[in-house]
Image (tube, rainbow over all chains, first blue to last red; front, side):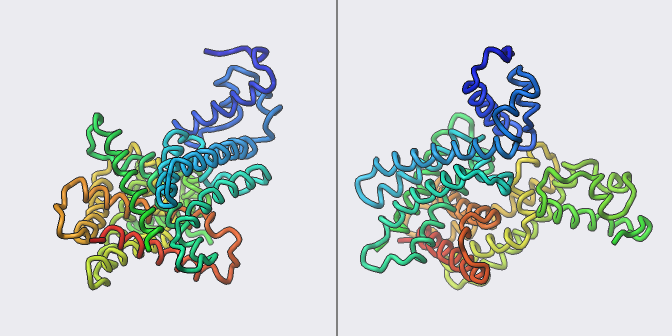
Length: 207
Length: 207
């Protein structure tokens, strides 16, 4: 269903371009994305996307920044569901993987190599905020007895981040689900994520 | 330094194409790779790669199969360095991340989306062997007291695989090293990997 260019208000076309970009990345990968292809899919002129984004990197940067902002909110919401520091860490981990599986297009861009040259300040800020949301719950879950040095917080955060990032990427790309019956996929994914987040939270919080 | 086509014996050009492909993927990503670009870089005719590989997917499949075979060997070597099941699991994890960091071009292809349509039997076999090498040390490290159901082995393997895969991808793409002084990078990477593999091995082996 194509829409005429004039049917998009300025702000709406921007959002439509970002939404379409996320879908395209999810289905075909970042390299299939061009501003020209987005314009074609939305039925607007080739020149229309340039009113909103200076180029592909600029568009991907805005997409990733939106993703990091949404991820930060998801992590904070996750943390608020736990009653102990260990539970809060576990719920944050579950929220992390759930975000990646719910927003695969955003997630791939956020952690892809294409943003290497991005200079968008909002992206750097949003990425830092998401990392801080993770580090906060990790630091709070570390055993109180020992000094919480910068080093220890970094190592524990790396464990939490690596395990959830790896889980998200492996589940998005499917290898751990090879041979799993389609009817059992949801249940298997849930049990894999629950086991992983519980073990990692316990490993970080252990006395 | 270009070499004339005739300076490659048949088997040597095949290997040169695979080596150059790994380098190109490492530096510029999978999408920069074409058989034509490889031919250009090796100074052989455009048609020469076609004698060895039916197309890009075929070449990437062979590259990934080589990678999985080397990874399996690295995991087995890692396991042999441990004296207890938990140590063997930890050493296997370290070997896994070390492989990814030493062979970034191979690793990205092995876990990239480009192989989705590959039908190379050797790739499926090599991938299964690598997964089995991981699963073996995980199963051996699970506490003996409880039944080692298929489900438990799968969940623990997913934890081990996710954490090492995530660690490898995050370290390859750099975000956990933001702000780390270049002179301290090696030491920081080592401590992050050591902490992660020790914690995950202990979490899986815990009584």
